Amino acid sequence: MPRMFWVVLVSMLAAWLAMNFWTAPRIEELSGGSRLLDMRLTGYSFAEAQSFFAAIGEEGVSLYLGWQLWLDMIFPPLLGAVLFLSYRRLFPGFPGLAIGMLSMAFVVVDYLENFAISAMLRAGPDALTPEMVATAHQWTITKWSLALCGLLTLIVGVVLRLRIKSR
Image (cartoon, rainbow, N blue to C red):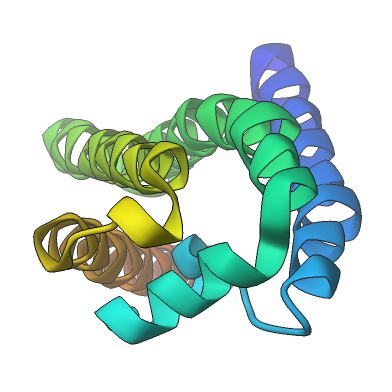
């Protein structure tokens, strides 16, 4: 793999580690132990979102809109780049390019989810609407569905590459 891959991979891991060992745990602590909305694989209801935002208070909203959102804005393109380069290596030629470009859909959807959650955070629990939550929920479900597809594609690519090398 080119040196650029390793730089992007380390940067992606740094952002992931910061979110998963610093900002997300602190926000979840403030919420009384509830998982961040964008980390919920099966999404969330209006009542769950409203309860979560009420529980995290001003400190949680500030951390979420600050460091957490900033990290979650740099993580997706870094992950997308890692996946793109990995797919290009695992699937030579046009298939790798096509699969790599499809992986960029994850980046777009993650950004749309971030914008939707940011709007909910700014509105606060009292001004939150079912429509706002439904939109964010849908982006969350779509993001995790794309992530699962991407992971499965990566596993298939690795297995195929290992089979080819073992022959």
